[in-house]
Image (cartoon, rainbow, N blue to C red):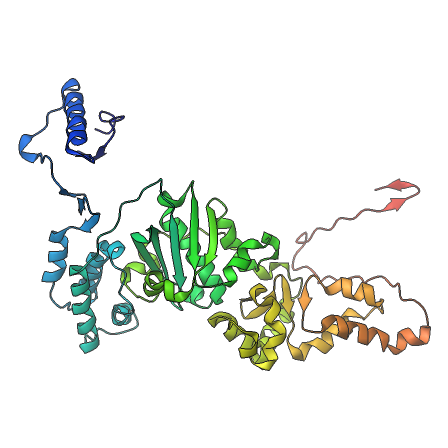
Length: 453
């Protein structure tokens, strides 16, 4: 059918249905004549009883298409209205499945379905109470009052409005401030522990991939109420936090311009990001394809040391305070921060928390209790100030680290007694004994009798 009707402007085919569009009656009739002529040429029989002509609106693929926009099918809305109170998890999932169909039409559903998520968790017993009953009736009312969505116009500018709350991502596609489609999904337990800036970046990834057929191949303005995102997307990729790098890489195929917009002006996606419809649960939608990167892979330390860093980070009050702040979102003003965190303000967007360890970019932030030990390791071969700083600046950090290194070198008694410029080489690293033969291979370059090997 699609091949038969191809190249006829205004004729859209889905399976065995043909939709003929026209901005005027004359244009409609001309296109209708072309479709009928093509059908006659191809010996295609069309049942007159199934045809509708010159309609201002028509039911098509589960929607009502009209001159005003896209509306949900009243029959499906009526089906939702007739649903009785659910008696078990399976019936609740069926109800939420109907709501899923209407999700792109609904925006004002903040927190309405939260009580249902509790019931659907396997660990919880079924207990339908007044809270669930209120949410059930409210969702049915909202389905009745679903708004009309505008039609997408490829010639008009396109805006993607995104937001992220503690548990949900929200996105809405707009043209001329009129909604084209809504979308949202729940964050996984792991994603809920991300820093707020990572969640906001993930919201952009979700919005672009959800509306891929709209945004791919054209310029799109992305609006977010998280101002640090503007800075993130203006930086070179290697200067962004490691976790956010993988999100930014996913967005490389899209032509997006990220702009800040105050939260007061973003009520639509802000509301979406605070709803908890079952439709948004990740298992019911295709997973976002993201290349997982193990940030700790570049840390050349033993498992014992790794556990030590993790334990000391978890017991460090300042770092735990920073972990909480980084997850919930940094304040807009430095003055509002606790005194201990103000020193991290200028590079707050570079800080990430992976597996209970804090990083500044790729550099591990050292807990206070381990900094003295790190200083001793840095200067164990009594190298000079410059070499000691060069040795560590790429993989560890704490506020005032460079000053601490300079101080320990200048006060080193061994260096003072020898009274010489310290140009010592770094010590050789002792390798652990392998667990089995040929489990480790080593290679090197050397010179012998004027020949290189």
